[in-house]
Image (tube, rainbow, N blue to C red):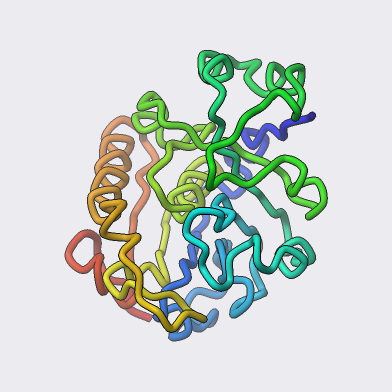
Length: 246
């Protein structure tokens, strides 16, 4: 099993604006003309409504949430989709002997040696085999706080939503400005769904946003290049970051 080292994208888009799309209803209010030269990143079901993405991320298979449009219920559609630049499936590993190597520069080589049959995943995680079948590169999500305090590195810190992996990738790739779209949180419903859920509350997602913003603030204080965060049509995120005005 060969793991792709996402660090290869470090500073690939240095100084650029990134627009990150979540799957909340306000996604449909966004027009690309609002920020025409941005790098566009989407996650989960976003590609079903906005296919013109540069990058695409997914790390929740739907095995736990059982969302109506989750990966496991529409694998062919997810695997067939291709963004303009690259597509990524995220892995959350269970194996303790793997975790001890997370800070190693040879982390991906170690995982490759272990082989896919010897790697155990958390229940919600995507799988290496699925990424291979879907033409996606893979990345890793971990709970090691070392990566929360080094927010522009990889593996990505697990903040219980793939939008944070998109944001950490944008930081790694050199973003100067990040605009969040469709990150509604309190609606408790996503595009294409008609039944409300409590996942955002159960996962304390608002607190995760505060953790992420704090980590970016710390990074900004330590680095010469400052990154600005903005949100389009804020609902649950109102007051946490400046509002983007077209």
